[in-house]
Image (cartoon, rainbow, N blue to C red):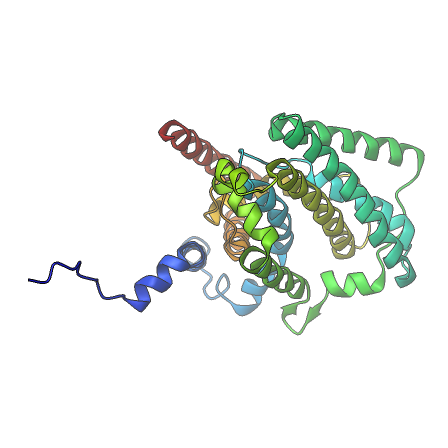
Length: 335
């Protein structure tokens, strides 16, 4: 009698879904929101074919682009575990955008100095966040909230002495604010960033270390990974990316303002959650975060069309974050 265990036949469709379930679930959510929006708009306002039109879909993706980009900053610090969040990204981006506006002053010659300034600004404040959270074991929520207020104070002091002036470089405006046909150029940036993040998390040692620390820091430590350094590095990279996103936002708006990026902090966190990324860390699928940002923007468009505006949007964000907090506490109790 053959006592060998029976091997179940592998089903390719099931395996594909298991490998990509977060992306597929979020994509399905996107489709359902667009279809639901079309039905609701048609029933309430009597117009059909507007919410699902090609131009409307591309407009939604364009508006969701910056939420998706800031979501990358959040994903990096969430991936390394410890309940990490970065509430300072929008404020770092604002400071970077204001400084870049002065350096560019409407000229392409100012792009390189602006990028260098953004790297310095982002690396400095990201390093401050990383040192305080990783090496002093302070809660990232408190540290980054304090850093957000510090940076906003610097912005306020800066603009009280120096008037906000200077436009974005034409090349930057073309990349972020213009269309090629109905195709928004900013989508090129999002696609490029998505490909880079997929390669980093799946093909590089840095990505493996970030995910390993987030999944189980004790195992990562025993494997020779410097856990504190990896966590600190995640905040540094988050700060640098936030500062560079500030340049892109400057190009999109055409000019800087002292509140240009602060409203992106909460949506960026919600986009990560909607994308199915666990707040416990150890997961890093940026494509699902991008799709999560599209879901949020399509819901926002629906609320605006129904006359609910910001009230409905922020109520939805709050409910999603409460659900996230409840799930996080439940998982902590199980451990």
